[in-house]
Length: 426
Image 1 (cartoon, rainbow, N blue to C red):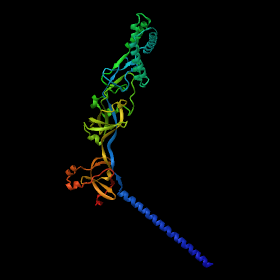
Image 2 (cartoon, rainbow, N blue to C red):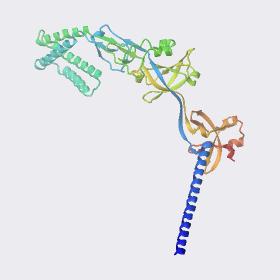
Image 3 (cartoon, one colour):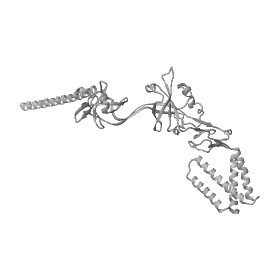
């Protein structure tokens, strides 16, 4: 019994010992794995290497700025502005010089218009029942009236709708006058027509029509800055001057109900303030691009650069010749000023190694590494646009004919190393 018990105890000790041995092995393996992972991370941090696939891309050097919109614009305002105004030309409509763009209401206009409408109805009834008008004249006028009525059904613009209604009224008046000329003198129809003429004369004599002083586009968004933010006084502008205007960025200019204006729609200007390195190096005549809030990129040209002695800020005036209509609603905007942009093979800056003023990348093809000479066209904060050198350029750099023939070019979809080490390449 004692012997059997000793065997059992010995067996249990062996099992415990075996379990401890396996546990120790697992701990050792786990420790090795941890050490390997930590070492790998250390190597990646110390000298990270990974693959980047070269693709076509675009690179920008840009800054987001606030700009003040400056236009060539003429405000028009008549004598009867207190009467209220009626638009003849809609917002942003094109007009020629001397075109009527709006008018002021006459005194008692509402009652006069109502009385004329009542007379038109009576005249129409008399004409229908009693007057024999020449069929050709009647047909022509009726067809013109029908066409205008059909056009009205498809119009949603209120100003255009008013224009069609006015044209219909003119046709109806002409129709009535023809009927009056053909009717006996002193007839009821003639009396109605003469009465209508009297009211119409009173209506027209009291109304004041305002015409365009120049050709351009009409706007009723008059903010009182038309004579302040003008192309004629660029030299008077400064950071303090613009900030003292108290304008809010992106705020819509309200529609004015007493005046209008005509804007030169071929070009306008944006005044912006910057302290960037590019602004300090900018030159008059330099072409840049700007991106508006509608995400459209348009070309601009620097026309004026104003540097203040005691300030780091530089005031730059940009001239644009597109999207002028888009800026009618605003006086102060946010936009992106793009100093330059370029497209081509886009690679990370970490993949480029400079050696003796020449730039290289390391291509990996199935584990075979090759250093390729590249020309860096533009370099941004994180990426560069590169291209292979031409044979002519390589010759200028002093490469031999055999070196030029054997020159290996970087192409799209090549795989290149990040953080390459040229010393390890054979």
